[in-house]
Image 1 (cartoon, rainbow, N blue to C red):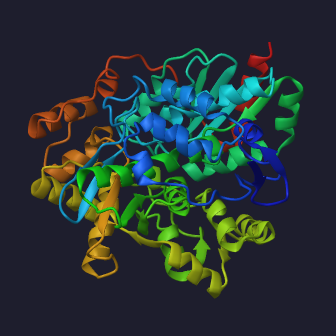
Image 2: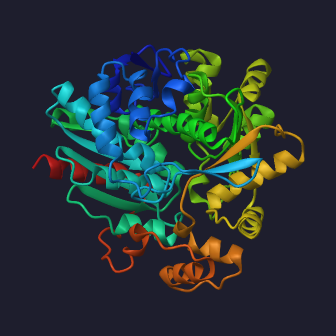
Amino acid sequence: MNYRSTRSNETVTAEEALLKGLAADGGLYVPEQLPDPFLDADVLKAMSYEELAAFVLHHFLTDITLKDLSKLTHDAYTGTFDTSEIVPVKTLSESFSMAEMFHGRTCAFKDLALSLFPHLLVYAKKKLGDGKETLILTATSGDTGKAALEGFKDVPGVHIMVFYPSHGVSPLQKDQMQKQLGENVKVLGIEGNFDDAQSALKNIFVSDLRDEALEKGVLFSSANSINIGRLLPQVVYYVWIWLSLLRSGSIGSRESFNVVVPTGNFGNILAAWIAKKIGTPIGQMICASNENKVLADFFETGEYNINREFHLTESPSMDILISSNFERFLYYMTGSSDEVLKDMTELRENGVYRVPEEERKKVSGEMIGGWADSDTMRKAISDVYEKYDYLMDPHTAVAYAVYDNLRRSGKVTRHTHTVIISTAHPYKFPGAVSEALGIAAEENPYDTLRSIKKYTGIPIPSQLGELENRKKRFTDVINPENIKESIQEVVDEIVK
C-alpha cells in the first residue's frame, strides 16, 4: 500500500512516509485507500495486544512482513507498560467504561504509539538503506514531547528536538521534559502556544532548511501524529477496546459501542474513525473539547474559525486551535486533495474556512462534538470520584462531562455502551485534581501528589515520583521566530 499527500498527487511508499513525516507540499500522508473491513472477533479475541497490533498494522504497512511486524510490536510492548493488558478497559456502570491509556513510560496515551514508532522508523531506515542521520522535530502541548523523547532516547542515528509552550503545560509535564535523559535529545520552551510551535515546524518541513540539511546528510522527520507512524498504531487500541468489551460481557457479539475522545490535534479520534472503517463496531464518535472549542463549533456550524481567544486551561493537550489531523478527515470526507488545499489555504490566509452544507451533513453523520469548561471539568472529577471511586485527569474529565451532557440531552444513544478514552494519569495534573477533590495544593507539586495519594490511596507512579530529585537539563525558552535558528544549530552539531 502506498501513501499520498492530502494536498496533491505526491505518492510514496509506507517507509518513505514514515521517514519524511510531512509531504513536500505541506500535506499529510494518507493511505491511498483504506483497507476493506477485515476484523473478525472470533479470530482476534485470543490475541495479546502486541499480536493484535501486528495483525492490524499489517493491513496498512503491507510492505512489512507479518513476521517483521510481530517482532517490532513485541519489542515495543514488552516491558514498557505496567499492565499486561496494555490498555485496561474498566467498566464503571452498564452505561460506560474507561479505557485507560496511561500505563506506559510517560503516563499518557501517546505511549501507545510512541513505543512502537521508533521501531518502525529504524526499520524503514534500514530497509531503504538510508544512511542519513534523522532529526525528529516535534511540537508538543504536553504529552507527545515526553513520550517522543522517551521513545527515541539514545536510538542510534536518530536525534530529537521538542518544542513546548513554556507557560502551557503542567509542572509535572514540564519536569518530564526538562529533566529528560539521553544524549540525542534537545528540549526548548517557547514563548507562545502549541499552534505557534506546530505552525513553525510545518513551515520548516517545506523550507530551504530541510533541503540544506538533507544535503548535509540530515533528514527531518516528525513524531507528531502528522506522521503515519504515530497515527496508525492508535487504530489498534480501538480494536482492542472492542475485544475487551466482548470479553467482559459489557457488550454482546452483535452490539456496537460509542467512544468519547478528548481531542486536541484530532489524531486520537481520527484513529477511532479509521478503526470503524476497517470493521470495529463503533457507533457514535464524540469529539470532546475544552474552552478552545474550534472543533465543537465546526461540528455544529460547518465553519472552522481560529480567529478567537486562545485559552490556557488545565487540560493543556486540548489547548489547540489548528488541529492538524482534521486535514486528513476532510480529505476522506471530500475525496479531493484540491478541496483540502483550498480549505488549508483559506485557513492560512484568513484563519477560517467553511465546508458546503452537503459536506457538513456528511461530517456530522460521522461524528458529533461537544465542549466543557474548566469548572465543569473539575466538577466531573469530583462527581465521578464520589460516585464510582474513580479518579480522572482533566482531559478525561472533559470527555466525561461532554458525554454526560449529551446523554442527558438525548444526543447519545442510551442503550449503547459508551467508552471514554482516559488519556493521562490524573497525577500528571496535581493542581487541577487536588482542587477538584478539595485538597489544598502545595507549592511543591510533588507534595500535592503525596496529599492526593494520602486522600485516595492511589500510588504515585514511579515514572512521575522519581522526577522530583532529578536535575533539570533543558531550561532554555525561545521565541517562535527563533525555532528555525535553533534547528540549524542542532543540524550543524550533528554534522560536525
